[in-house]
Length: 467
Ligand code: ARG
Image 1 (cartoon, rainbow, N blue to C red):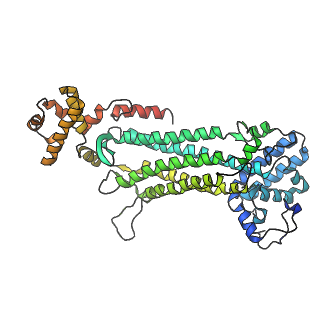
Image 2: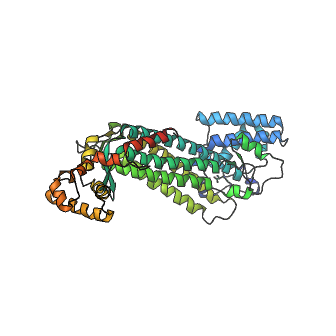
Image 3: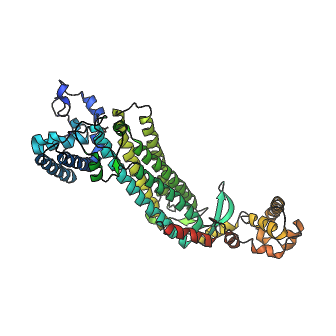
């Protein structure tokens, strides 16, 4: 059976009892999800094995039938994994494709598998298992990215660069400190992932269509067998709920937003004008016409993937909004959004980890830029407060005049003569020149979480113990 077109229009073998004829071709096309939910085959089979095992344990089906079912499901798993399984669109989705094949393999015993369950709790289970595994993959990918940043931060705890606000030079910082800002961001993403795993760690199977079942099932047993903490507590909510998918997509959107900010910085830093970093050949491309060019395509694509991931979140939120309880077929539209976002996020995280690990940091260029743009003006103002007893507002004004003078002379603050500075405020002494270098500036910022190399090393150690 290929994709249904050559098959006769008989009614559906799974639910067609009350139907005289099969669906219109368009109906079949809009209804089928097998094209994308075949991705859930391993979860579907695992879930069915746990369900059948529980049914036999509870005396609801015989042990012989359970053994046949489990053996048949194992065969189907290897058929799918070796690529010989023929998926049929007429059988709509992964659940019915697997069940129909099971009937062909083991005969009537296959029909007992669907006792005390429905596709509504079955799909909720399969999809939850898949999203949980994806969250675990995301957690590992974030750990790898954080690890890459910790290494670069350690290497560059003393490397001075300009810190920016409004993308205007603000105060000197260290590149290590800047790297650690991303460690904080991706660390928060990772803790959101961990919380989401906790939230969703409940087994849906046994909620049946929506009302539960009269069969004496043991939902705690299936929950345990499938690695969930416990079963869900309300059968109506269980088959209506896609919060776990929305939570994954919102976490993915926030992480993608972080990645896009980093991607943008990489794009800016790698321009010849900034020249703060050089991307490795492995993570850049050339131009087909301009031989001199090295383009940050990977960073640009990471920046763009954010649009897709955010789009998936909005799409699923919109699908779910206003849906009455319990299951509606609208919910079948949940999977493609999640699959696409997951693939994009995995790729973006891997590409970013590679770029961060590989890039060459041009400390000389960073240092030169750090000293320009009067970046130590705040240090001068702080010195006037500390050493000359000026109120900060007055110190700010005096410093402003010094900056204006330096600008007029076309030099840096540190190049003004003592006489020039004393003409602005006589309390200034030659000691002031100690704070006008970028190194002195960063070394002085020892407040908790500040940019001083010693402080950054403490932040690195804190994260190393948690990564
Ligand atoms: N393919 C369906 C989905 O993804 C499975 C559940 C179908 N349930 C139903 N009552 N028609 O949502």
